[in-house]
Structure formats: C-alpha cells, structure tokens
Image (cartoon, rainbow, N blue to C red; front, top):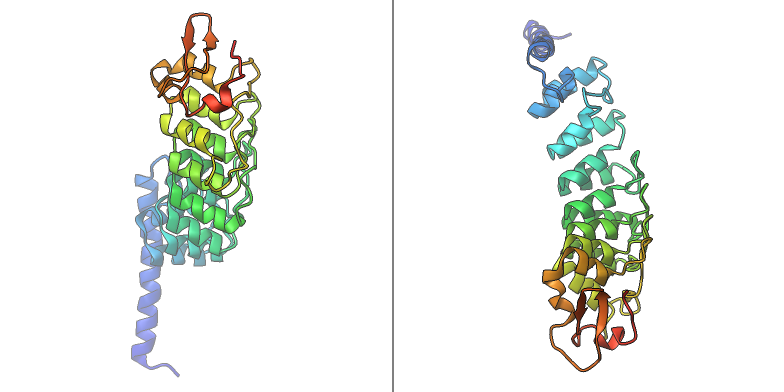
Length: 290
C-alpha cells in the first residue's frame, strides 16, 4: 500500500507529464517550422529525451512525416543525437535515416543506426546507397564505417545513373575517399550510363589530386596494383579523360607532361598538341586522342 506521500508524488509525476505533453503541443501549433511538423519533431529537434519518451508513450507515430517528408528519426540523425536515434529505433522507427546521417557526415549517428541493424546497402528513390552520399560528401569516417559494415562490399552498387560510390567521390574531388574505396576493391574503370569512368568524372571537375591518384593507382609497390586505370577508355561521345582535360581544364594538363621525353606528340584536339612526361608516357606511347 503506497503511503500518502508516494501517492502524491506519483500524481505529481503524471501531472508533470501531462503538462509537458500539452505544453509541447501548444508550442508546436504556434512555433513549428517547415521541418518541425509535429510535436515529436519539435521535441527531437530540442533534444529532450523525457518529452520524446512521453510523446511515444502517448502513441505518437515514430514515423510521422514532416512537411518535407522528414521523419523524427531523420531529424535525430541529422542532429547527430545517437541517444534519440536509439530510442526511436527501439519503438519501430524506420531505418532510412541512414541516408540522412551519411549525407550529414555524422559518424556517431551512422554507427548507432548500424548497431540497430540499419541496412548499410539500403537504396533511396534514386537507387543511391548511404555509401554514395558519404562518398559524394567526402565523409571519410562515414565511408569507413559503412565499408566495415558492408565488409567492403557495396563499392559497385549503382544508382539510377549507374554511378558507383567511386564515381561520386571522384566527381566531387575527394581524394581521401577515393583511396578508401580503391583499397576496399572498387573497380577503377567502372562506367556510368554515359560510359564515364571515375577518371572522366575527376577530369571534368578539374580535380587534380584525384586525377593523380587514379592515374598512379596500380603502379608497382602499390596496393591494388592490378586495378589499373584505362587511359584509353572513351565515353558515349567518344572522349577520353585526357580530352576532358583539354576541354574543361587545360591549365592542369601539366600532370601529363611534367617532364618532357622524346616519345612523340599526342594530338588531343585540332588546336591542342602536347608532349607527355614520365608519369604517363610509358603507358600512352601508342594512344591516339582525336
């Protein structure tokens, strides 16, 4: 039999919960933004575990969508609130928040989601995986966590444009992520729907360090030495990566002719003719780029 004091205490506790719940709802109706479309969104954004717990106990749907389709779990992942992501997952929140955490580069949130059995290879409406987003964002820590969860698989997953995570990292110029993916076994000559390789993507963006990394990958003494770039690969308009340079980034063509040797001249366009150095000449001697 509870004492009078205990009865009073529990009644007071329920009163506090009631106050928190309805105060939150009141604030929600007057102060919501385009993302905070429910009381649960507001509580997650504020980082209040007691309020989140109370709302969930009252039957609030943990998968309720906000004004732009963002769920409370997405919001928790974006804010890197691992305590709240765990709480929401325990009550049945869907696990698509892994994409959001990957985009935001939140390593702790990604690790928490993966520990709650979120599928690292889940695809969104464009067919992109969290690894695509982490690679495109240059989030090396997230890429490492996802590769560990995937046991280095998933590097050849393709989105709606048939791009791999390596394409995504190369076209954004993230050299450190390119290395992680190549070491995990990513195919250096994979082509997307335009038949562009990662080297094409890096060339188009003018990402000098990524180009150097891809061109030198597979040289003697390097890990993955059999995974060498194909400098003769042409895309669907017949252009090689070197021609992409001549079109978009002539000023960084010095990568390919750092020290001149008498290996002849390679024609890149009707108006551009360059001699190439030791970095590539041993492999470009017989190529023609018209």
